[in-house]
Length: 152
Image 1: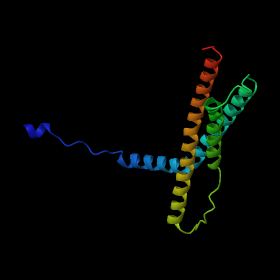
Image 2: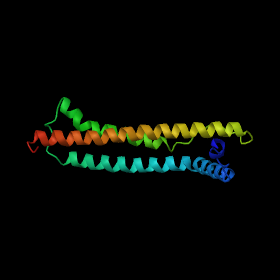
Image 3: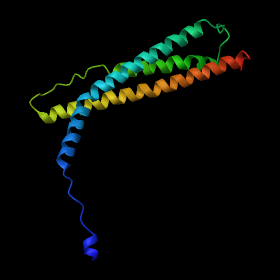
Image 4: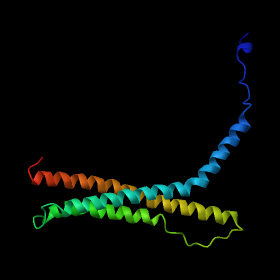
């Protein structure tokens, strides 16, 4: 009686369709990976540029001229430096790889593609990290400004 209750599961009739679906998703992922990294780098360039411009103009129109010296100067300069590093790292994503490609070798194409994606992704990560640090430095600079002017 126990043998009748335990039955092996039915084989997955859609197994081949499932495998084909995931292969198709893999192809799509590979085909779109470089363009999605490039698009994200464009966003970082835009955000870093806007933040740097706004911060620079905000500092230029404050009453800090001649009052900032020593360590406090680094608080006000660090956002510009961090955002500039972020901007430069994001721009590196767009520099072409000048490696020679042997189109007749699938292995050479694969290696070049993987190296290109790895380099672009690394530059995008650096850009993103410095963008976050730059935004944090802006908040620190705003806090220091408000504290020095007794507004906080």
